[in-house]
Length: 262
Image (tube, rainbow, N blue to C red):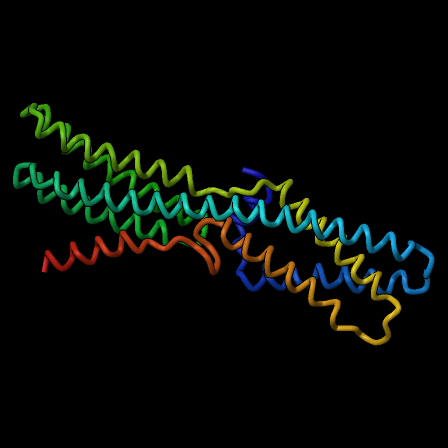
C-alpha cells in the first residue's frame, strides 16, 4: 500500500475537502500564470504558449478519459463482488437446512451474524472499520465451517459435502471482495494528472494576463478539471465519498430473511 493510500485510509477526508482542495490548487495555478508573469510580456511567445496549451489539454483529456475508465472498471468489480456475496450467502442459507435441527439453528444464527457483518463492511467509511468487520465475518465463517466439519465427520455423505462447499464459498467470495477493495489508480498516475492540470491552468492564466480585472472566466477550466478529477477520485476510493458501492443486494437478502422469520 502506497503512502498516499495509507494517508487516505488513516485520515479519511470528506468529499468537500477533496473538491475544494483541488479547485483552490488549480485556481491558484491559473491566477499565478496571470499575475506572476504579468510584467514579463516577452517571457514566452504567445503563439508558442497557445500551441503548448492546446497540446497539454489534448493529452490531459486523453489521460483523464483513460484513468476514468480504469476507476469505473474497479467500481464495477466491487459491485460484482457484492452481488456474488449475496448469491453465496443465499446458497449457504439453503444448504444450512440440510443440517440436523440443533446444528441448523446454531448455523442460521451464525449465518445471520455473518450477513450483518458483510453489510457493515460495505457500509463502512474507513479502512479500520472495513478491517474490523472483515475479521468479524471471518470469525463467523470459521465457526460455520467447524459445525459443518463435525457433522461431516459424524455422517460423511454427499449432502454434508454440499454444505461444506457452500460454507467454503463464503470464504472465497469474501476474499474476492477484499482483493477488489483497493485503489485502482497508482500514485504516479495521480501525480501526472495533477501536474498536467496545474501546468494547463497556469498557461490559461498566462494567456489571460493582458485582460484587466479579475477575469473570472479563467476559473471555468479549473472548475471543469476539478470536477473531472473529483469524480475519478470518488469512484476510485472504495467505500468512501459520494460515489461508492452500496450493499443493496445484501440488504434485500436480509429483508427477505427477516420477513420469513416473522
